Image (tube, rainbow, N blue to C red; front, side, top):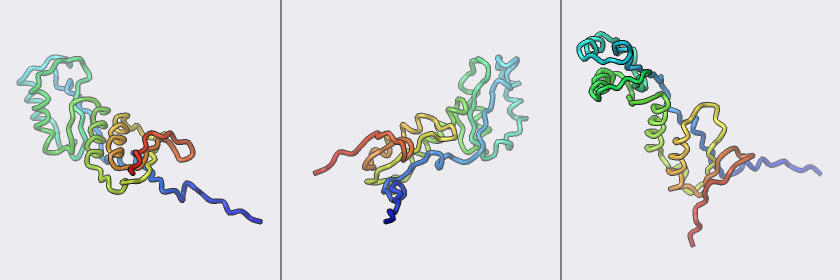
Length: 171
């Protein structure tokens, strides 16, 4: 008498959602505005403008860019706007902040336009234990979006998942 071993996970209707599969592709670059400040702190308008004019902006072609300062310099709002005016023609996206802020914005954009049709009425496993650093708020936004269409949500792996949410049964 031979018993057939059935892989219940493989035959499950459970849809796996791995945020790593949705990581926006491209080079991430942090541009430190303090490089154009006197002693890293003082912004003098004319030298600042001259330095920006001389800078090779093409090296950021198709980059995702975060603008910030590695010093505690207080910059006028126009300074980041002026740098943005040079970057805009060559970059995919520009954010004010750190590379982590940039990553959060990239995921926000991707998740806000994600086609939810393939997940409608299905139980979904949101993969945990990712190798790459995915911002925590990407998971929060993902749950908010999927909860509008899914049957149920789980987090983790099929062998050890945590139930997150289940749609109320309609009568």
